[in-house]
Image 1 (tube, chains in turn red, blue):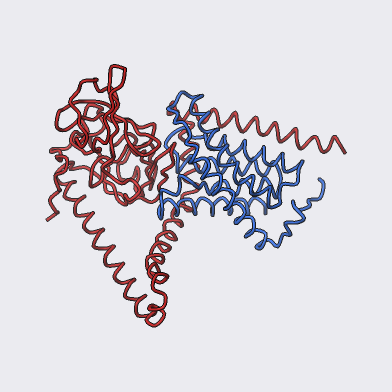
Image 2: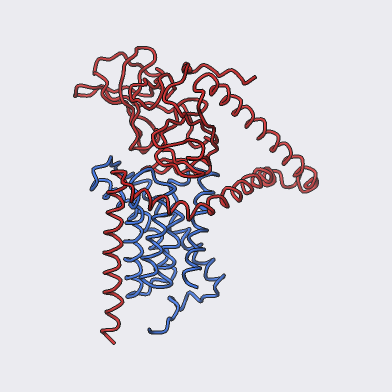
Length: 288
Length: 169
């Protein structure tokens, strides 16, 4: 009896060691971008892709339903008398508002696309994760549209992130506020250059800025183009705090320009630079 | 059958996590839905089931919701599933206090293991925010109790009897 009880425990321990060792190999391979690790990751995504599609459909319906019934609790007595008519009208208003907002966003993206990069792809965000250690969004277009790893992604408002994985029908974008992200930036006013790294609290820290550089709170920070990924001129954020340190560089906190939790569409640039760059803060002309 | 049910549980958990990311992305910082199937299979089924479900749950999370280090969440959740399943085999944890404790500790330990792995591979490590850990623990405990209570009703399990009796092999 004791032997039979020990066997499952021992076999489970052996299985654990094998599984953990395999995971360590996957991690190492993933960081070195080895084909085997990428193949396993692609396989997992392919197998679970239908779940994502179903979640998108259900999630969209849930959000729409929540918006439709969002006002009911606040005015239950009044809505009780006019429930049917108000619910129908609210749903219609919400739908039309959503369409109007989406049209406005898409027009801006299209206008920016026409000015910036002849070859670019618009994509809808289908999943997002904004934890302290990892900030990613997943979009619903992938290699079939020409998307590949290390392409920049932008949205109305500025730079969003970089593609870290792409497959058929999806692409995973690491946001600039991810702690592993880094982007070369420049203070628009004084042309002071530095590197912006994401932080767990959702802000940026601008590093390698000399101690006596001309940087002030409120200064706009844009991409410098020196990292070879983002074209220059895309807004990253605004300086929120400047702290002098005892070292050779100052400590600068930058507040992101974009609310990454509200992104619904992005534009992925298929070329590193376009024929014209968009000046930070300048609105795109609507598409004709 | 158990494979089918586990696959369904993982698919539902992934779907809920995705919908949460669409509806309220900020909440994904506090809640890890993919830990619930791990807790369930570790406490209510077996150590091996907890280990395997943890492995698959972690790989799903790595594939869709992590920017780098594919395998990190798989490592962490495999370890958690195995450890929780082992403890559940020795102590009666499939009761309210055990479930709440597991629900509180799993997200905290998961976060710390991920931090350790990032340090091991010389990646940028962000010191854990104690408030974030506390919120994750509290939310995890409450939601785990809710999930288990729902599963008890669905599967008609008497929680006072603890782990379901399984015939010896």
